[in-house]
Image 1: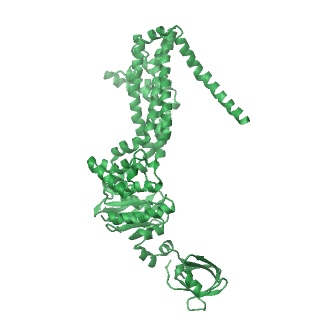
Image 2: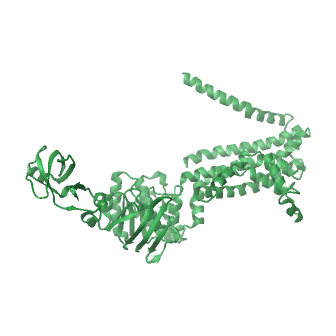
Amino acid sequence: MRAVVSRLGLRAIALLYLAIILVGPLAIVFWRTFEDGFAPAWDALTTPETLNAFKLTLIITAIAVPVNTVFGIVCALAIVRRRFPGKGVLNAFIDLPLALSPVVVGLALFLLYGENGWFGGWLSEHGIQVLFALPSMVIATIFVSLPFVAREVIPTLREIGDEQEQAARTLGAGGWQTFWRITLPSIRWAVIYGVILTTARCLGEYGAVAVVSGRLQGETETATLRVQERYEAFDLAGAYAISIVLALIAILVLVAMTVIRPREETA
Amino acid sequence: MSILVKNISKRFGDFVALDDVSLDVESGALTALLGPSGSGKSTLLRIIAGLETPDRGEILLAGKDATVLAPQKRNVGFVFQHYAAFKHMTVWDNVAFGLKVRKRPKAEIAERVDELLNLVQLQSFGHRYPAQLSGGQRQRMGLARALAPEPQVLLLDEPFGALDARVRSELREWLRQLHDVVHVTTVFVTHDQDEAMEISDEIAVINHGRLEQVGSPRQLYDEPASEFVMTFVGDAQPLGESLVRPHDIELLAEPAEGAIEAMIVRVTLLGRDAKVELHDASGAEILVLMTRDRFEESGYWRGQTVWAQPVRERVFSA
């Protein structure tokens, strides 16, 4: 009896905590957005600046996610399957974006690509605009979303071991054939899971992009920057509407993850 | 196809896995690499397959240098102790793998896979996944998969080591029969001397990274080249200055030249054999095996003092 009470008590505490921290604020955002009906929210979403912000977020995500997926898989393979000097350092550095504040990342990019930065001078001489433009925003986003695929794939690779890959080699498969036919199918759920997390991180990135983008309305403003801009302009309806779309995407990502997870366990 | 191992050495850090090993594997034979765990036998097999690179020495396959050849170019079949089944593929696709990566025509692949599944008696399991098979079935699949691309050499690394005793002896018998049909040069690694004695044409005994002796099962048993081989292949015990096998000792009721006085402390009747345990004057144990009929004819009893006379013994200089 006591056990039942304490179990229910624990559940109640967990749920209450989630309600206060997560669900409450989200619910308020939903409520405020649709307070005056659907039309104002729709109008706020379809201004050219907001549409451009969403477009920019999607473009950045569409570049950063594939780049980090390939990088993550290559890194994971190198760390688990190969021996080379500096492996420990690489393994530690993959986690750096998790530990580092995105604002610091943004400032670091400033130091590299700014007028007086290491590459800045050379780049501006050749007419390549990095800061306050798409390239720096993509680089910043790639940086902050870098660890997720590698961190998902590394434990899976360790777990499956390399016997299947060795078997494939003795059966006549070359390196590429072994990767495509054996390794990749074996880690596919970890890769998909990592891609989902990376996507979520890219869509939500704010700090680093805020620093390097210059936040030019309708030009270098992503969806998250747009939320902030609307809020500061006292257009709360607009800020809420954009937030809702971002929140819906996040929920979609969560649903995708829960759908995949049980399959991963039975596979 | 013949396999020639020339002066192979391999270290893992400070550990010497193989120390100057040379071995000539006859074409078409079934050869066992026998040794205790950690003796280097699996490393030698993996070097032949190209899964490890030797520090020194050469590997010749069919007379051609293959020392640095990639495993996929050696045309060897490899069977792993823990099956190494492709978990995301059906049994059929597992067996077809070696043919698919060689881009063989579809019809040919289908024919060959069906033929092999028949050979390993898994014809009705083609659509299953490895997780749905028993250990013995998985290993038969592993064999079919290794044989599918018609390798010139079949290498098996403790193929029955993960299976229970009954399945192990079944599969061992079955491997021998399979070899008589397929006739591919086969090398298998085992730490089980019965397994090696039972099915191989030739046995190479390896200990501490060195080759102790190569010969037929009979040669190893009757003419062991070292104390290690004598004690590892069959039972042996010290008697006086020499090593002797338990069934190579005769018990006499009277003292005789070369016979050692001992007292019978225990007699166990094991079906058709009798196991007689004796203690000599110093209390050291001597084990004697004889047929039960012979023991009963002799009329010896527990507590009796007898003389143990070695019929066949060997002395190895240290």
